[in-house]
Image (cartoon, rainbow, N blue to C red; front, side):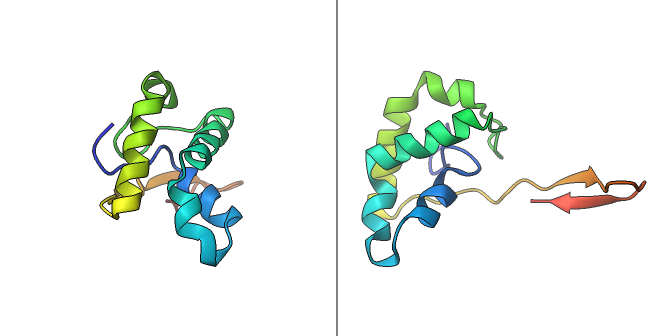
Length: 100
C-alpha cells in the first residue's frame, strides 16, 4: 500500500460517522477502530481504491498497514489520494453519470 492511503473507500468515513465530534481524532486513529473499519470494507467486498490495491492484498498485510495508518493519522501526516471517478450507466437510459 502506498504511504498515506486509506484502508478502503469507506473505512475512514465509517469511523467519522460513528464518532462524536469532540472524541473524533482519538477514535479515528485507534487501532481497534481501524480494524473494525477494515472489517466493514472486507464484508462489503470493497473495490480497489486509486492505488488499485484490493482488499485481499491489504488483508495480507493488515496489521502492519493499520499500525502505519494509525501512526500517520496521529501525526497528521496521512494524505489520502483523491477519489477515483468512474462513469456508470443511468437506469433506463443510454446516458452515463459520474460516480466518485
